[in-house]
Length: 98
Image 1 (cartoon, rainbow, N blue to C red):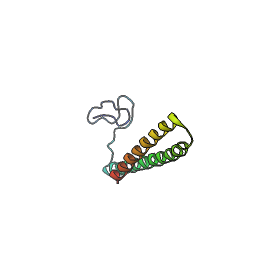
Image 2: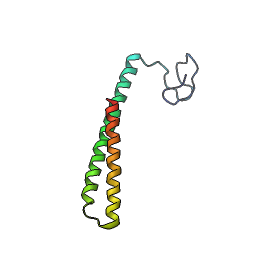
Image 3: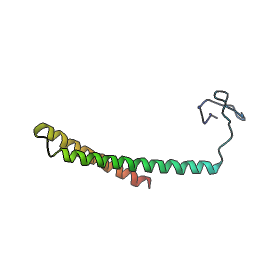
Image 4: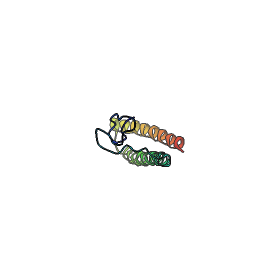
C-alpha cells in the first residue's frame, strides 16, 4: 500500500506513513464516489474554460486577420484554422465527458 499523501510505500496495517507521518486511515467509499464526481466536474469545467479561451482567441485572431497584409495575413489565417480545429476537439471532449 502507498501513502495517499507522499506516495511512500507503507506496510499493511500501519496507522501512520513512516515517511511523512500522515494517518493511513482508509477513505470511506462514499468519499471516493464524491471525489470521483468532483474530479469529473472539474474536468468538465476545465474543458468549458478551454473552449471559452479558444473562442476568445479565435475572435481576436479573426479580427486581426483583416488588417495584416501579405505573409502576416497568411500566418494569421493558418492560426485561425488551427484554433478552429482545437476548438472542435475541445467541444468533442466536452461531449465525451457528459
